[in-house]
Image (spheres, rainbow, N blue to C red):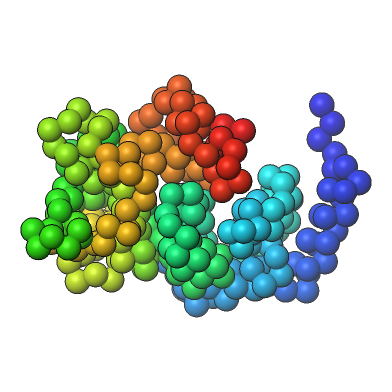
Length: 280
């Protein structure tokens, strides 16, 4: 197999190198903790600079604000960017998993609201899946969402998540909750996006033996969310979460509790922004 660049890829690599040589930082900020929570101002500035030049979210569709590029284009940029002491990346989870889920399942107003600010590094997202009793088994979620009794159509969320990366500096998050406790565990789940600054959300950093605190416990106490914050149908949270986790495998290589057959089934049954099945 020939791993050398094609002429088109070589030209793109040279374009990337030229831009990085003129724009990439030469030193890493001393406050950078390596967990995405160091100098957020430097990370945001670098993300905004990449976005302005068309090097952020290279493979995202243009209607999402991306470049419509190929995975190889993204790989080439990543290879060349790694040669420089760029800030730690607090946007990986949001741009790799959370926002693509929003863009696939939210209404148009929500997509318009969140897509470009995330690409530019103006807002940071976290993924609220794991729970103390379930670990990586997403379907074991016990955090509850119940319809508000006032007939508004809003939902009230109560429960706890754990091992949430970057929750302490995130602006928004996606959360999987149980909306029908009477159904089997893979059913009765629903996903919402939430404002991490909501007064009912408490974030407690987990202090690790390494001295770092990149993970967090997150507590939900009577957090009210609009039904418009729902991602996918009521009870379709398992299907939506599989799409998120498929993105996770591509974005950060994280292991999950779901098998490949479930991922492929969800990919066959779910369409992306271009109307084609995600499996394609």
